Amino acid sequence: MMEITITSAAAEKIRAMQNREDGFLKLKWDTEGNGCVLNGIPTLWYVDAPDEDHDVLLKTNDMSILVEKPKMVFYDENVKIDYSTEAGMFQLKSPNQILNGRMAFRNK
Figure (cartoon, rainbow, N blue to C red):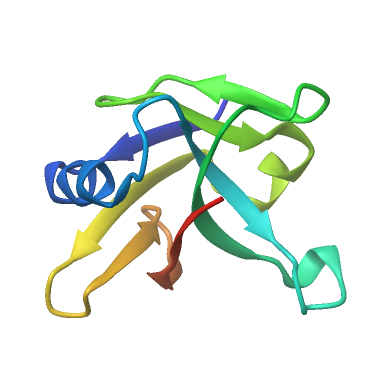
């Protein structure tokens, strides 16, 4: 099962960027404009509700996060969501690689 850790810097920035209290944080495999599911980009979304057919709610060390169950195959087993103050961007990392060093946050 996938395990997600959220650093304190990322958690603080996520809370600051949320535009409402009643939403859900989601790790979205965004394929918009990429043409193919294999060319997706991990993105953070803040959504009103889970997609009942695809999303699973995972607990992290800080807050729960939705992940698209069919897209979990694209992630490493252990990932970390961090925030780089130097880059001004979220980052998704694993022990093996940086999955997205400039991860966007979108309120949907």
